[in-house]
Amino acid sequence: MKTYDFDRIVDRHGTNAVKYDALTDVFGSKELLPLWVADMDFATPDFILDALRRRLDHPVLGYTQLPDDYWPQIAAWIEARHGWRPDPAWMRFIPGIVKGIGMAVLALTRPGDKVVIQPPVYHPFRLVPERNGRQVVLNPLREYPGGGYSMDFDQLARVADDRCRLLLLSNPHNPGGIVWDPETLRRLAAICDRRGVVVVSDEIHCDMALYGHRHRPFASVSDAAAHCSVTFGAPTKTFNIAGVVSSYAIVPDEALRRRFFGWLEAGEFHEAPLLSAVATRAAFTPEGDAWRRQMLRYVEANVDFTDDFLRRYVPRIRAIRPEASFLVWLDCRGLGLRHEELQRLFIDEARLALNDGALFGREGEGFMRLNVGAPRAV
Image (cartoon, rainbow, N blue to C red):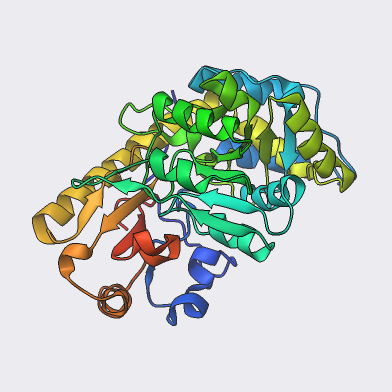
């Protein structure tokens, strides 16, 4: 089996990479170590780049349809890793996860309807519904004293009234790194299905479970979950190809599928760009799985290093060890700093560009999100 080099430093400056070339605009300085935007600094796997090059050797880049084996290949990948084989008829291309959330909001709700989110959570979950004229309702996660989170079902039952139409689920959770257990997902599905709330499950980190944890697709945990769910996935986080849009939606319920897919197809949003299929097919292969497993072991070692370093040298900052993905949620509240002071500490003194925890909601104040998807030397 081929061994991949994750220690290689790749210079991304000057490539219009948001992570590097937007530093001045976002943080006021380009002289920072960028550990914020959620893409990795590992080279995109060679077998994906080779597949793209082979396609670009053909001199015509015209209108392109998805190959017949595209959805069966993705379904087989999901089944092999997560024990659930979606029917290809349930699947459609979407032009990105955040765009997919916006499309679900527009297709499945009306202005003034309520959308439930569970902060601290990925900030577009709040911004996308708000900017589309929907009312965002908070169902904050319960924080464990020793770190980690659980869902607050009692509070959800109180706020999920007859104006609630969607709940946006981060599964695995960003920024908390939680791999939700099947019983939690079943309880969530039971409440939402009974109240007519559609769960949009963002599962973009599903192939990046760490330390033996296992991801459970929300739609797979019960009949209720299958009935009330729209699942979004993509190979982009796992294989570091976020610049190649290759996301997909899975909707098992026929009535819900007609509503959402009908909306997508009316605007031709389900039409995939030429290189999307090329990259995805190259990723979802045995060779891709071998690369993925080596990458995850390297990320686990980076998480271990981060946790050990903080325990030894900065004990007032605590790493919440993720169960999935390359994002580490740092609890900085032990420093006793106000929000502005914490920002100055990281940017002006440590010279680090991290995501401010307050971005993920009031519940994230005092935290920072650190991307450890980088060579160990970084």
